[in-house]
Image 1 (tube, rainbow, N blue to C red):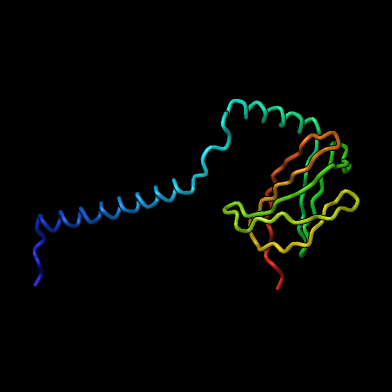
Image 2 (image 1 turned 120 degrees about the horizontal axis):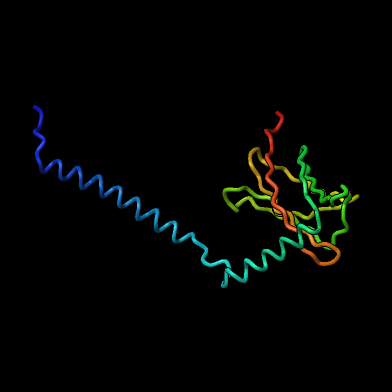
Length: 154
């Protein structure tokens, strides 16, 4: 025998549906606020001025970085406008996934002929390489490279 749908049943169904929606929203808001790191800089105007100066100094260098991953080796090279390897005072690179920092690594590179190499296995998929170097005159160089590692041969 079928039960009759009353106004009370409709009210309970509606309240339950909205209760689930509100509960999910509260949980998501709590997780979002809990993962927010806070302020990056105390004064955004000063930071923007410093950013513009650093960007202009980096553009004046005229350098570009490029990365290649073959087999189990990652190579990174920085080239000037003439296609030569500039002399660097310092070099580092952080390799990680674009979606999280769990897989981030900053390996120790060896350099030969201006090419920086490190043995590194990359799982297939998207990777971001944050290259950081310092020119002989102390000018910082930073470039973000998007890299896609292919599937491994079986």
